[in-house]
Image (tube, rainbow, N blue to C red; front, side, top):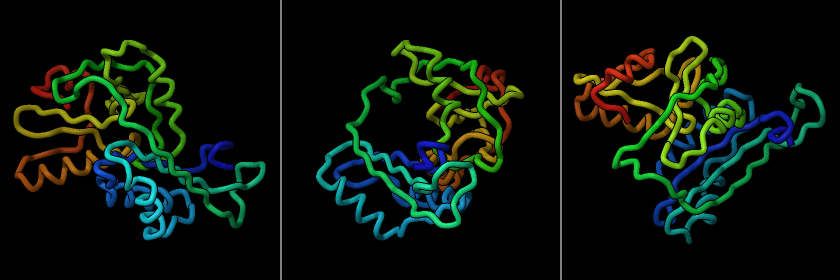
Length: 216
């Protein structure tokens, strides 16, 4: 499978609550965006939705991981002229960890986040940046590590998007050069607009984090 050989694919990680996939529309939209970017034939949304519900409807709480690969394609980087995309649906229990609502400890990672506008924003299978960054600590008290790009600009956490509150508006890094356009990130920006809270997608450095009134 080209997903295993080359990371040629996408994935979505979806929280399950009372048998329902949370924010499913946003996850589906990002999956379709990524499929278009990579030139992978996307699954039929109705069929995929039915498959997801058949797998999750008996779960009170959990996590669904949906993997979409280009399929099998032999040896070589060049994708085959035609391929049959493969999708893999996996369920897991909700992970345990620190209470994010009560506040958490984070750290800076030495591993830089790669810059690639062609892949920025989508949740592709090439996650080695985050894998290497996550290897940097084993302290369970640290909830996540903050990653910078090679120029020193904040990208986000190994598995999170980051927002700052400067006392007047929300600030968050853009995702046009690096990082993932998270579903909760999109929801946060949408709610901010509805509530009349100013926000700005802008380059941020460690100094901005250290001067911020709040961080989430």
